[in-house]
Image 1 (cartoon, rainbow, N blue to C red):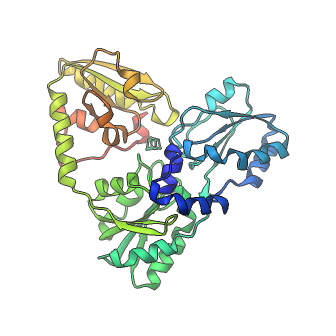
Image 2 (cartoon, rainbow, N blue to C red):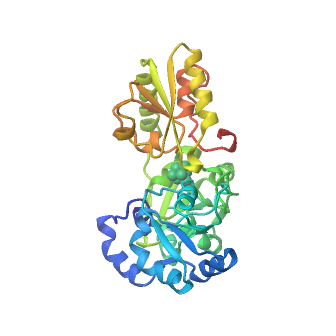
Image 3 (cartoon, rainbow, N blue to C red):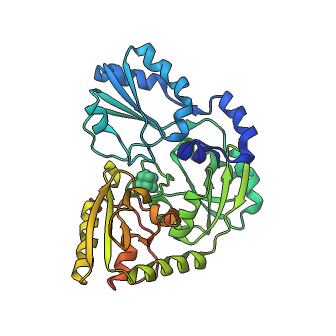
Length: 359
Ligand code: SF4
C-alpha cells in the first residue's frame, strides 16, 4: 500500500515504514530529467507550472534541480491533484506560465490549453520478488495482469516470469482512458474487462485495495495483490454480496428523497456535464427536483449548504463507492440513479466508468 499511499495522501501504512525509508534513499521514482529538459527546449519555456499529487510532493527537492539547470522559472501548484483527469493547465495559464509539467499520472488524452508534459513517475522497484511470493496463492493457471502506470514498465517481464512457472498470463488492451495495455484506473477497468472471459483470476501488481476492488467489481474474479515495494502478497478477500446490499440500501434511501443535486467537477477529466444533464432530466421527468452543481472537489463540506436530499456524482466514479461514508446524505452513481428511476436494472451491477460520450 505504499505507492498509492504516497500518491494519494503522502502517508505510508505503518507496516511499510522501514521498507520505504530504504527505497526513498535509493530513488524510488524515475522523474525523467532529460525528457523534462528536452520539453523545455522544444517549447522554449520561460515559466512553467509543476503539478504533483500529494504523495510526490516530498520529492520536490529531487525534482527541482532539473528546472534550475534549465533556467526556467517555476511555480508549484499546491491544490489537490488526484489523477490524470486533474490537469491544471488553465490555472497555469492564469499564472502566466507557458507550459505545465504534471507528475505521477499518464496522459489520458485530454485537450489542454498549454503544452503539457506528463512525467509518469514510474517506480524503479522490481516486482518479481513479490510476484514469486504470490505464486502459492494463485489457485488458477490463466492469470490476468493489471497494474498502475507506476509499475507498467515491468508488466511484460512479469508475464514472462509467470509463463516460465507454468501459468498462462494475459494482459488486456487499454480501456478508454488508459494509455498502456494492462493499465487500470479507478474510472477505467477496460483492460481487465477485455480479458475477463479468458482468465480465472488476476494478479494486481501494486499497492492498496483501490484498484483490486475495481477489478473485483468489474470482473467478479479472484484477485491476488503483489506489492512490489514491500515484497508482500495477499489475496483480496471481498464479498460482493456485502457491496451489493450496501449499494441497494443507498438506492432505497435516495428513492425516498425529492430534491437531488447532480454533481460534476470542473477538473478537466471529471466534467461529465452531458451525463449530468441526462440524469437531472431523468429526475425532472419523474416529477422530482434536480440541480446540476459544478464544484472543483466533490467533498461534503462544499455541498453541505445546498437544500437537497441526495446527490448523484457525475465527477470521479469512485467517490460514491469509496467516500459515501463521508456524506450525510445518500450519494449515487449515475447508473444507480437510473436504477432508482426505474430506467435500468440493478443486476448485473454496472460499475461507473468514465466514457467519452459522458462529456
Ligand atoms: S476520475 Fe477518479 S479514478 Fe479517474 S483518474 Fe480521476 S481521480 Fe482517478
